[in-house]
Length: 128
Image (cartoon, rainbow, N blue to C red):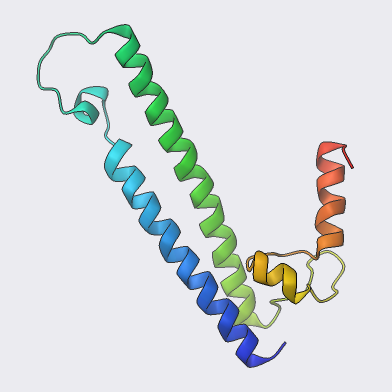
């Protein structure tokens, strides 16, 4: 892979990583409080209506899921950046063939070629 291509992918990965970290920070600021009382900003000791508690709980759960998914993506981006540094970026970790440029443009953190990734998904889900 050409050095200019590696620089392009590295820049795209770093940009996406920064976006994800900012998004995770927003989720943390909005829903990462320790208790329901802190999260809502209510200082009273009166109980909440059960529906309000359910909504708050659901929002906190959704924020956790978003943060978890974003964290996994940041991990995969970091691994791709590591592969750029060690010279293995762009090679399929399963078969060793070069990952197509169209796949890397769409998913710059891809670690497998489309054929190996498809086979992995079929094996994982049992569906074709």
